View (cartoon, rainbow, N blue to C red):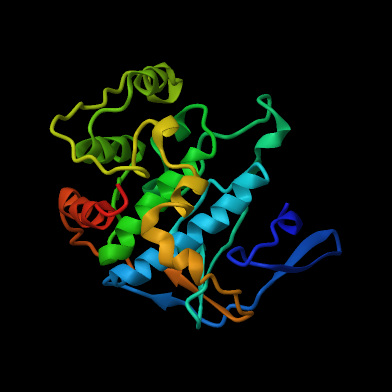
Length: 256
């Protein structure tokens, strides 16, 4: 799979070999971990998100869904070139509808609601929205403490799940007897953080949006040396989820 994903914003597989029955993968060298506990400026966030969407677009073009996009899986070079890595949960959609796509994928805080049900490429775009929110202030946008709390946290901000997803949730034996609280007065975050996956931006729509116009004109090739950007150690005093989302909303106003 990785050999087909040759793109400037995807980590490069240098070599693959077997030794004593074990498979070894050699990737680009990563020198250190860079933490941004307070997030990054708006222009830097815009650049990172644009490059991330480019990487996802290349994956989706080859019918590959990453399914585990999170800060720990984003590498940033000394020249601020982003690369997507860790394709351990990735799946090829060209395998057909009978392929065994596991439910429990993606780190919980960046997992889209429909991963509890049949899903597609839109799950990666949800993660992009979550990443953008975290880039604004360094705090996760939806820090659910469990699967149920994750859904509650999302609905607290964005409103109730669509009826078809709610039905699938209640029909899932893992959640038998549980109820998800429905909240009113949601904050609408356009394009990426939409509960209905069919209404979410596709990668091509994201890349062609006017907010990225200047970035499209100055695309740069990626250098060899890369450095991963990881979330800072989670602050125990996590700010209000609605407040955190307000930061994301302000960043999305020019994208909506």
